[in-house]
Length: 256
Ligand code: IPD
Image (cartoon, rainbow, N blue to C red; front, side, top):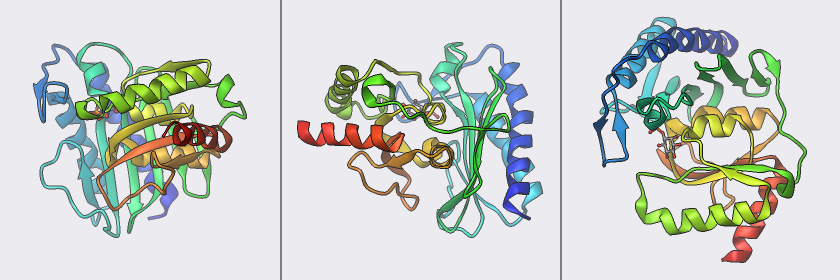
């Protein structure tokens, strides 16, 4: 099956699964690694539906999903990387800003990605080498400078040991831009293609969003400016238009 067809199947599965999110009532949160790391029955149901649909589309595919205990190899020949609800804390609190994130990779290279915000009916998508789109219309990163940007950042809530460094960077971003935002979903932060960084994210948080940023003409890096890893399941992520990101990385280096 061609990558374009795979992308269409991902989008169709996400739209079906989105109904579960929009119809959710009486959402109960269970904790995972700590009190800030929560999961709901809806995360599991969305994930099950996505796996069922994508397995039917591509029976040979492997899966690397947030709500799965046995995760498969990241270098598989055909792999779906899934965050069923990115922004689970927002979802639990009734703050309508969450999304479904799915990336399709072959041997560690993400080739197709779709991030769907069901509340706004916004489908961000990308095919490697084929550009990035919002509801089928091409998108590009902005040409603004850092001083004229609004910077999204994430707090790495499951790593309180990173809080000093996280908020020092948020302050640096605030002092050098128009303002900062903390919106609670890394995948949508990436799709909004502002400059941002978070010190630790999981692969399912960034795999799809990173391809969308790159195909929109932006750049994704680790927090020290290196290539983003797809062979590890966690990384810091910094993203934005190239000039803005380079300026921000220079500022953080200068700060030591
Ligand atoms: C979380 C969100 C959040 C980010 C966390 C992620 P989840 O994903 O993307 O914005 O700060 O690091 O883990 O747990 O809601 O899928």
